[in-house]
Figure 1 (cartoon, rainbow, N blue to C red):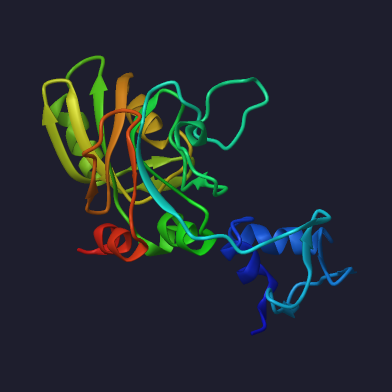
Figure 2: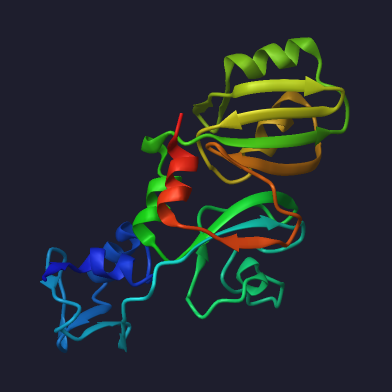
Length: 229
């Protein structure tokens, strides 16, 4: 059955649909030896599809939950030789992290080779909450707690904060977005430094694994956990 190239590529674990479209637009995708254009369709069972001159093949979709330890890079590879998150998982499938956690941030992370699934989890329009536990260098003052509850503007865009709780220097909060260093920037704006940061939930998927532990799960179960209100 013919499908759009970007859909085939995402299902093959090449990239998300959006990134696949970019590869097509750059002329890096061929179908039966001919450079493809955006909007082209193909049948992966019949047609020869190449990305950067390498044939693609449909892989078994795999979904893994892992508790990312501190000082592990949230990437597939690293030119500086640092240990990456995918090196902690034993699988023959080519997986990649869904979203990112900073090098010094711990916590729950999903690894997959399903581009459509990954986009559904990280895209802002799906409004999936990510819950974090932050240990600050000093207790949060009441006036700053109230500012957080109202939401802060970071880089010309408001960040809404949910489920805010405080216990001494430990703060638990949830946000919908995933901009780089966004939690750290929230507290930096208020004059605080984060000493430890851990993501403890994605939607209703909570952290139950020990650092470095992982498990493979079914897609339907995972989606239900993440998206169920």
